[in-house]
Length: 157
Image (cartoon, rainbow, N blue to C red; front, side):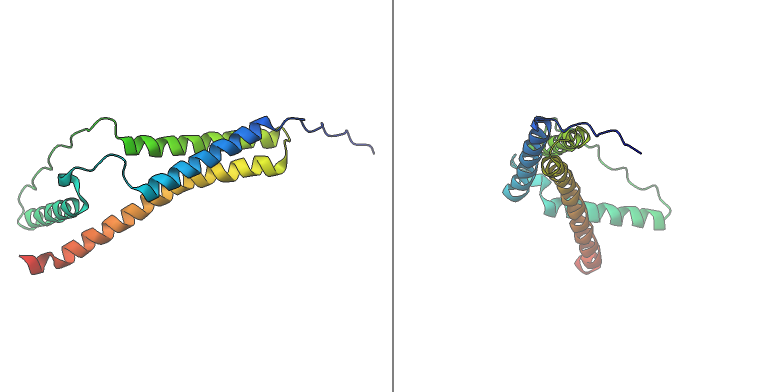
């Protein structure tokens, strides 16, 4: 029983190499942005202390209104700040990571060198995963700060 020969691997590893380069750039941008901090200078009224304090006060007011069977106060309208450089950098990093993932899969299907295609997939997935990890860590930290503020709120009043 004779099997058909597999098609030969392409001579060029161009797609995988481009994917690997884009994945490396995406991962570097994500890591640098995480360690360098915000690009745009944050407004003083948007500091983490003010955000936690405002959220804790809002939670307390809503709970008090519910216990007194009153109408809870409506939250203030959120203003749209337009284009935020930090969000643009995060979206660019994630977008390049997804593009590196796609190119890595295409290179794998085209039977380019396995190391190059798998490296592109790994770098792209790492860049995208880093963004999710940063957001998850920020949410956990924010929830911890809110919980701590609410625990100590009775002592402050």
